[in-house]
Amino acid sequence: VKDELSWTTIVALGIVTLIVSLLDNYLPVWGTQKMGGNKQVVWGTAAGLLIGFFFGPLGIILGPFVGALA
Figure 1 (cartoon, helix red, strand yellow):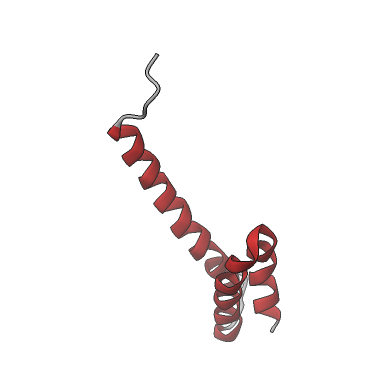
Figure 2: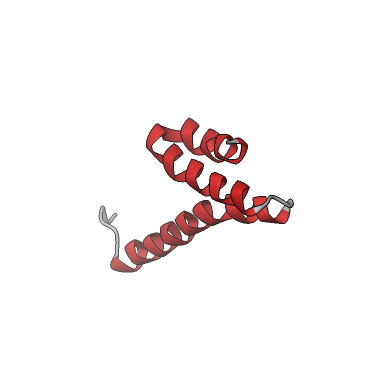
């Protein structure tokens, strides 16, 4: 049994990681726009997501919500 990853696997996982990261950053803003939030709320959501990133999983979940309310 091989105990190493092939380059194909590494590249595929890198692409999946990139796509998920982009969606994770874009979807809260898109959802806010879709539900009728104004530009100030969209910017608050984006800022809350970016700031929440530094506070771990709970910050990522609560950051956009708090930013939208600010």
